[in-house]
Length: 299
Image (tube, rainbow, N blue to C red; front, side, top):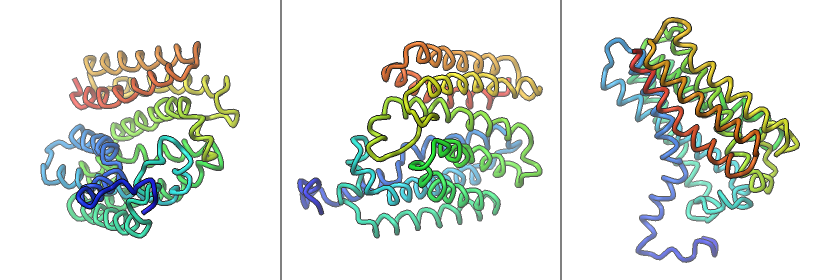
């Protein structure tokens, strides 16, 4: 154990290990991901089965924790360089790479098996693919190209497809509605993550991460892309109504949430401060669950 973790006492060590594994899997973030899958399932399933819903939660949670953990294993040395990540369990030495790898492997395999057996095999495959895309594509690309955010948006939106497949049994019967839910979550990630990358840009630069849409970082092109994709989000948020799949009430909720994000993005475009970027980021955290819950009603 290194000096940063030397303050951990024998009495607190068992709790610290448990806490370290929770941080490794980013369990709060995993909960948000699982929320998207279960909401999509409940939205599309004609007769929801609660055993399937429970398996979707457990399997999705484990798969997401595995992806988050593998990401930290691959970036353990880079995490030491950034303020926001230097107190993660691997940089602190609370967990070894071997311990983290075993944890992530068990979570990934167990989550895949749960999805495969208790929802359907395609859900298991999609869950496993999401781990591979996040760990082996998105993670290494972060130091190479801003295009990494586009790549990372696919595993980030896959929970909606997993929820749709769990409800219907396959891609052929998932339906256009599930695809629209996927598109909403896919587009949402751009203003969400770019606003985060804006106010953390200096910290990310310490690890040579390229996460804003421009190689120039905090420039006019980057702030315009944030505004542009916020406008896209408003449009895709009302597509379910345009295709006759939902009613006026939930569409009104989507419009209100979409306009709120667009106004925050416009304010950020006019005054691109870290504070305004943070406000936009917090707004996106509220937007997604509200819109997903509204669309679930279909009214």
